[in-house]
Image (cartoon, rainbow, N blue to C red; front, side, top):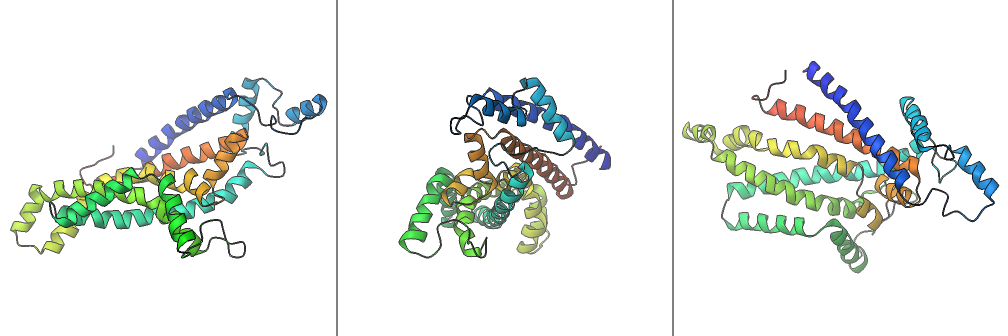
Length: 310
């Protein structure tokens, strides 16, 4: 197991380096620059500003300097917020996105697993058709449509919940998180319930489950101890990248509900050509993808004794 972990971590290093390199040169190839939207300034001052951030150097030199900073765990300063570093901006936005993402994925796993299992156990019944119908609607309606609908109905029309932003006195209060968490969780509930339904149906038809039933074991024991454990394996594989995407924030959800998360900061940074902030978020996202995929693989092996690591 330790050798497997070491190999995966060693493979992760060149993977992240390739991602950083591609993202760096793509940002530099994009039209416009970080100071193009500023008020017109004398050329001499503009040259001084560019020199202060190393933007007057050839691209290859900027790349070498940036990678040297990464080696020192220094993501550099923001090009738009002069008094903040990239680490400061990520530290401000990531907790908001992480809380919303963690609540969303927890809700999605809980509800999706129950719905999928219920549909499989009641296959070709009204309950099954209801779950399939709801999950289809959840997949078809994207968050950028569902979010405004919930905000208009629940927030503005019925006045049950606030429609967005953080409470200036208390920060992330529960009532301000409900709508964004539900909006973010609905598509995941739909996907997880369909994954769980298909997997559970296959497991229920397997020989070892039939054998367990033939031995006279209680139905609840067969489902929980034998079927459910094998049925969640596809779900574990799916949750790695899904969790990373949710934890790093949903751009649409944070825009709709005016939440200062990392996804919203990423969009603003990209539009303003704040190269260093964009790169910092890309590195964060890539790192989370690698770490969560590794955790998912380890969980998969723990749940499935047939999987062996050399």
